[in-house]
Length: 158
Length: 444
Image (cartoon, rainbow over all chains, first blue to last red):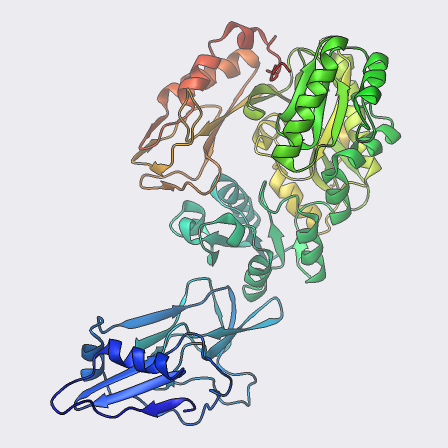
């Protein structure tokens, strides 16, 4: 993905800390940074990408399952439920012919469009608030949804 | 007739509407906020749909969400209840544009009656008496003085943007006017962002009496008698009764005629209420028209035997009223007490969880309430938790019945205004029927 850079392993025997990764990303004004260190993998995504580009939605490489990544980030490994922010009709794609925005197993980034909710003939693109992997999609295409209804279960990545 | 109606309200009125829909064989969808997800109307509805978080602005007042909810549930009509979006002309217009029937009057009538100055001009033109006063914002204290001299003291100076008793001053003598004007102007600018002032005659010892009207799409309009709502505190009605007891038959007939005149002037459709101030000598003045079902509508239902919500739904679906004025008879006397979750002495809201709810029952008693044990009274909305309505052959019987009903009502978990109502029902002024509106007497 654009803006992503592989950082070199630190001095032999040492491991990256999440803070070091964040500092490195900030220092180089990077939108996204992923660091692999032995069985650890730390990925940093900035909330507001500094520059343009960063649109490449090309086949997202599915993150390997949980394991070291979360542990390295020291945050509780968890899942995030993305709920409907409004009442309306849920659509997984821009049209019946189009490919769905996301499918189960896809890696998603914060700000990425996950679905459309149609309310009062307005198509509202619903963006992800987190970066991670879509574990489950709770609703069917074209199904009515109410405010607060769970739509996606996302395994949050760091 | 409709097959499915979306109820865009909460609490007792949502349940009230739902009950009539069920009797009419109409399916109901209750649109609710997250705070009301476990409420009784939501539980009893055929379908329910969450339209937003607790704050009313994002749920019950959120027009796109409500329209969207109606559309995905295939609801043909929306009943707005009272408060919230019930008198929002833009909402009624959007419903119309989206092909959803708004159960209420036309947006034009809502808009006209929602503008105090326009409504007053309309009523005056139609021939209904209005309180003598300024027709436009006052230019200055000199104009106020000239006008007050013509009308005669006492007068009341009001902020154009005020309401509910806020931003007004009663002036009893000419030499007090200048100071009252200046104070009111400063207050209005600070409180409402507009220093525009009006002036009108102050009606002493007035009663608030309102007339219920119904109109259909064919221009048939009837009145369903009056309600006396003179028991108020800080401009909030606390007890209403029908009929009004201390007015002459001539005054009563005059009120009915004036109410229908106002309703005709705006081609009023659906249920509406024309409010008047009635002076001791029987003279009366139009105040405003409420273009919705009102909280106190059950007292009218009790004396007429007419289900007002049913009439609203029938009229909205295009059915003719089907009867004329002479078919309406008023029987006996009805009283309603509004039970609020409030401290009965200071009237401070008392939200919380209701642990015990034992409503009254027996002959001639009706309870409109969404309470149940475990019900949560959220802090986000108004504090009305129950309406106790009684019917008797006459006023004395209705009062005795209400005293009995209140004594057996038991609510725990939140404070209620029941002790206030019990005191009121023992008050000699109320018992004699001679009570009048309390008015804020704030000197300059």
